[in-house]
Length: 401
Image (cartoon, rainbow, N blue to C red; front, top):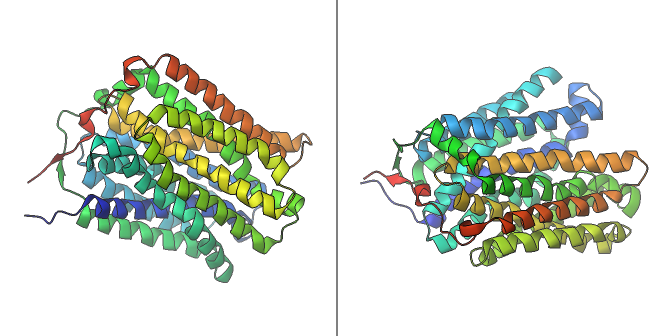
């Protein structure tokens, strides 16, 4: 009989994959100038490399979730991490800009599906009243990456070059595949699963409302984060060496949020989501006022980071409202947040381009968070029986003996 590991060990193994994904996603933004020099392109063009990854996430999350519906979840997680390793390994060896676009797109394809399936596996190992805490443990890998992985990636890029960063991420992905193969419970494929059953989730209004809350409400955080480094140098007057510290404080806020907030969400899921949106709106509104001094922007950035726990809360909400289309809905959560990653910087960039200043991103972010809250109000108005309904037990894998 195969050895059975505790839920905590399985969660830790899955979180390593989150750490790898978070490191490559956020480090690519901070390494944009190095990418531009290394590929012989200008900075705006280098931004397309980041967009290619985000596009891969948006496309890959639903596509892979639907096509792999009949695979055992353990097998799927291993395959997704191997895909991620290959994509990042190729990125490390990209000969030019155009190949880099292709390789970053390929790297993004397994991102959403991995987080979605990992969340379902994590939640399946604990009682329903601890589901959000289990999902939060998986997301800790991503948030810890913003505290540790991104600064280390920046240092590695400075000491050697940006290619080594993608190479290390590829190695972390291989490590994750190995850990999942060892620790994750062996489960049997759900032979009742089908493309049609997964797509059924798209017929549920609460699924779309939950995704919209994330796509709009989470955009506020990205509006600020994208231009945080420029704000620090142009408004706060901070030195370049201070930027990694502030980014780490932001990541620390996200990490603490994913430890603390799930405890409240497991008691009152949707009220917690609404409270997070209002918290984010308030903290983002304070950002322009706090940006003038390093001593005020540090606690403000930490507080904005706390709002990042919204992703974990909405992931659990999708388990409640997706019915039998659990895999697709869980993966689409990350498509929604990468949509936010596109909307936030775009809206913030428009404000800056129209001469409203670097700190105007805070007001833009506040507006987006309030937009997410309006959608939350609509979701609450039409929640009906889904508000307090238990999760669909189809998220529990059938274990093999």
